[in-house]
Length: 338
Ligand code: ATP
Ligand code: FE
Image (cartoon, rainbow, N blue to C red; front, side, top):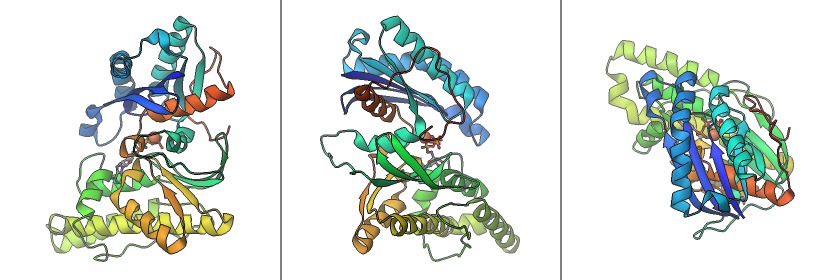
């Protein structure tokens, strides 16, 4: 079975070809235009998708050495995401499926971040077994999901305000780092002392998260310190990043541990762009040893937005005959399991 996956929910245009669970190609065109604005500009994102989608799909097919006539189905991101961005991928997928007369498969982007764990790889064929806990940590979401089966998922907790990726990006912005700041905070943190500064952790009941308070306390902290020493940020960037990252990781790990306690499940799968963070990888390794968890993190390229995760989700739906008809529409808000 050959599936073409198409992803266009935010600012990356991506297409991938899968043969069953194996990725033959995964092409991602990242839109650099947003960097100068310090965040994603929706109008510019949809225009860039419009320009990129055809070349990206062509490249994915060429790299996979697959003719479009050999495709079994087309999977695309229906939501959640930016409406204008989603419309480009949705319309393209519908037209191509219609033209080739093959099934169309609508995919939930957040389910795909979780199901990316089922991509088969030559180096790594470990996959979580059901039921498992998925912690999806990305630019727009922070969720702990109970995954009972491929398409039987229940959100146990999520952020009440900012997503964890936003917490990274907004903290980075306060330190004058360019967008997206998450990877840069990670880089500086690797050279810094995480105990240098202390930031308060939010008190949120149960398995929900909150990150907006952290951003505010970082803002006040930086204002206070730069008043005393205008070069405070430049002189301490590594330590500030390490301390901020440490606080964010503490918040995530505390909730994860609580979820393990509440459910008795010790299979843990992490997904989303923040899963690329080097600190979280270390923390999970520690938790494996200390708490007896089995943790899973996808390869870097399957953590941030990519079409391979749309392709694998498409393949899993294809096996079940879960197809969409041509009247399917993009949805900016689209909850897991709905
Ligand atoms: P969503 O999936 O919720 O719709 P998204 O698709 O925009 O959001 P992703 O592409 O999954 O999000 O993740 C992007 C986020 O991951 C950004 O906020 C980015 O800063 C963050 N990120 C990427 N790499 C790292 C890293 N090494 N450390 C911390 N954060 C990182
Ligand atoms: Fe994403």
